Amino acid sequence: MCGIVGYIGQNQAAPILIEGLKKLEYRGYDSSGIAVQNHGLCVIKTKGRLADLEQKVNEVGGVEGSVGIGHTRWATHGAPSDLNSHPHSSMNGRISVVHNGIIENYLPLKAELEEKGYHFVSDTDTEVIAQLFDAYYNGDMVDTLIQVIGKIRGSYALGILCSEKPDEMIAVRKDSPMLVGLSEEGNFIASDIPALLEYTKDYYLLNDNEIVVLKKDSIKILDLQKNEIQKEVYHVTWDLSAAEKGGYDYFMMKEIMEQPKSFQATISPRIVDGEIHLDDIKYTDEDIQKIHRIHMVACGSAWHAAIVGKYVIEDYARIPVEVDLASEFRYRNPILDKDDICIVISQSGETADTLAALREAKRQGIRILSIVNVVGSSIARESDDVLYTWAGPEIAVATTKGYSTQVALMYLIALKFAQARGKLSDGQVHALVEEIQNIPAKIEQLLALQDELKALADANANAKDVFVIGRGIDYAVALESSLKLKEISYIHSEAYAAGELKHGTISLIEEGTLVIAIATQDALYEKLLSNVKEVKARGAYVLALAKEGNTEIEKVADKVIYIPQIHDKFTASLDVIPMQIFSYYTAVARGCDVDMPRNLAKSVTVE
Image (cartoon, rainbow, N blue to C red; front, top):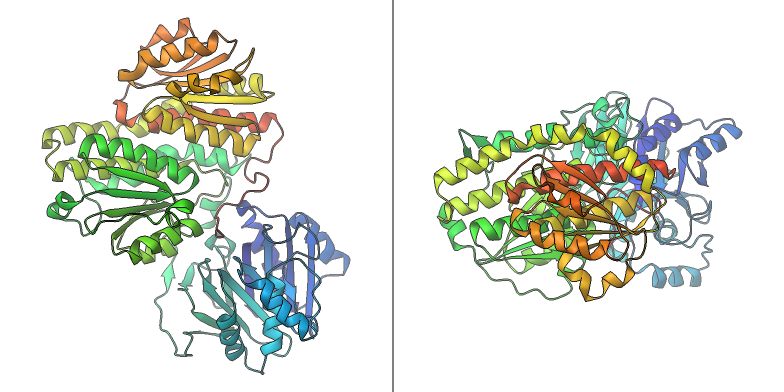
């Protein structure tokens, strides 16, 4: 997997494919390739960056043809190489396939095909699809695809060309994103909207096991029984400039700077005259009063946002909250009660583990509320209720504004549920809502600390190990802060609840070890100071975060960054900003590719 683009129309396909793939570079990849109909299928692919693919295309004098598919690959089967790159072709060159996802039963299928005389040249599961398609091909692309779907098991978004059908392209999806773009100059497939924004803002969003047949002037969508499906056109309201850097060196810094606006966009439509309105979700006060337990399920940074949510919801609404990693939730046979609800969090709305966890919760019959950024995504469509973060396109692999807007919705859910259950009075809710409305301005203040944080990053860029500590919500932020640092700078970083240091981890602290101490919880401030003293006594260099006015920490820490005064439960929205900026400049100082960290992808659509 990672990025798919396909085009069939009146223009040259190769330039459109390559430009579309460039718009998907943010997803992370290790190789790329294209296949174009040109009196047969012309396939060019290579390990490395898209610049390497362009060079290879130029070396052969370009590729003529108005029908083609392209792919950027992030290795799941087989090391990055020219042979393992997509598109993959059948042995006779008749079929070419691009694929996102994982075919779980590819090994027995490969063995069956080898017995029939098919020879394989790659280590991938995708080549099995190409060979299988060729084995079943009967002159009808749709009939053949239906047979192939019946044989394969796993997740997939497929774009397929056949040399014997030069005026046709077919595609299908299951558990991996795929959309269809419409324009007067031709039609498209893609795994994400930015690939096509230069050409169209009108799309069909495919559901699982929907097959699309594309021609230059027509699109037909079918189910597995070949019944035609009528779909509404989804119109994108943002433009290409929203997905471009806007003068910043990296998308990540652009998105860090967009957080005041994104946070505001998330809360503003949902706060009216001091009252919280969670869109049109169908939770009555009586429904909320009946909630027995909340199960929050997410991966990565979204999981950290869920941990913040646990602290805030349990404290305000007094509802027990369990936070699960999605990759563990479905396999631990979770105990779900009919009066429980499941809150599923995903920036892309396509995270494979999270989608699988959602389906397990639905199988057990409990209600699903999802928090996603991408309208029409799989998680959004399969949930009972959806809250969109409205963060706008997030391109950098390391999330910033996506996380911040998820946390914002955690606050609103907590207060709404607390009010409905009678745990907070109307006056208390109004006061806390006003505090939330002031957060964007306070984020702006922290964004002004760039120079100071850059200097700190430059001074610590050669750190070998970093420990990030905190208590309560500060611990939740420590988890996110540590992840940001390790994923983009490649420095080994660990987050710990500060009270756990003495249970083993403190043995790793030695002279000069960088410890980042987050000390913004008033009720736990003195205890955190004691933890700072413990690591200082063992030679640590301590960078601390504290609230303005809490200057006692200056006596024990080497450097202190202050955040504006804010209610303890909302500190997560401020603490994370300096840590994002510090991580960003640390990565820059180390010469890392900030937007595309090694081995990572933006939307993780495989388990």
